Length: 138
Ligand code: GTP
Ligand code: MG
Image (cartoon, rainbow, N blue to C red; front, side, top):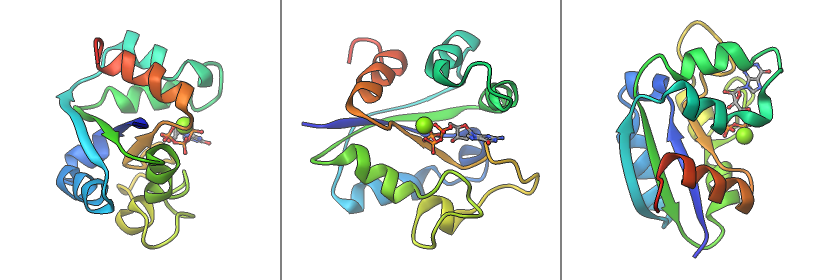
């Protein structure tokens, strides 16, 4: 079955939204295959965000992602990769539609685009690469 990597980012964990994000994944009909709370290392984040290295937001993004624990999740189900991205909504929470995680739950004051609560893999290749990074052996 198709699977994707979801991260509840440090803002989501700090705001107590882990259960809400997992609830939306489960009530949509996807299955949780793995869940882990951890504080990401520099090496893990460098590998995870390799495609963004050199972009202006890369440094602040990595610092933000290290600012507290994240919840890493493997979710499974038919179409779960685009399906979770649809649940998450647009990257910028200000632009994200109501009904989506980012659109409904917003973000911290501080108003940085990186504080958008969740990550979801964007393709089969990314999903398998990212699951290997966050859940070695899965
Ligand atoms: P993810 O599911 O987190 O990968 O979001 P995405 O696929 O919608 O966005 P993308 O992969 O392009 O960027 C990864 C993350 O970098 C985003 O989720 C944001 O946290 C952050 N980000 C992307 N673009 C910007 C930007 O222009 N400014 C800032 N500050 N952060 C950004
Ligand atoms: Mg992305």
